[in-house]
Length: 213
Image (tube, rainbow, N blue to C red):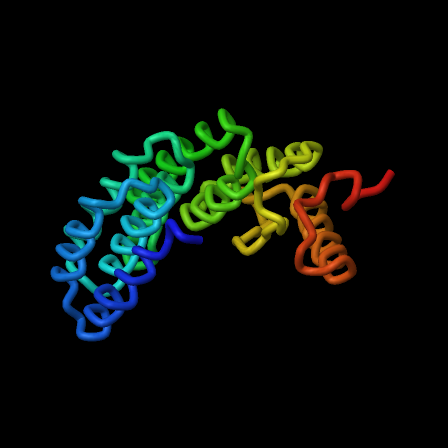
């Protein structure tokens, strides 16, 4: 689309060449200069998010965090902005109980905005479940997994098309209820079978589709 032409040119002419040379501060400066004249919200979100991600992976951490903060400041009602901030604190190389607690708070904020817009609710819940599993907060993880199952009764236009289950689900003493884990994994398996059958363009499934009565 035409509104993305300037971004594509910036990415190819400036962003990727600087990234290949590990010139991370210059990436941030170039993005700042680009954003001065860019007012398309979707393009702005893409640029700010990408700068934060790439700098966090290989560049100055403090600069990366400022770009993650900028994303939330500029898009305070957008769930993906808060998911990005949650991912920052939940990264494996920041694995501390306090960081998981902070990450969980950001995912809760994302969930609140997703519910308000009735968009991407399950997407955020999946991220939150991954965070809670890493934190070994089994009680809250159970609650969120039950919410996902209940939410499957909602047919939502914009949401994850996949019923994700890529987090730890232990069922020993003091962890998760075995019946809940069995049911959730069964639903996820049914969703994979459904997508194999109807194709990759299948929309989000409902509970009745995955667990027919």
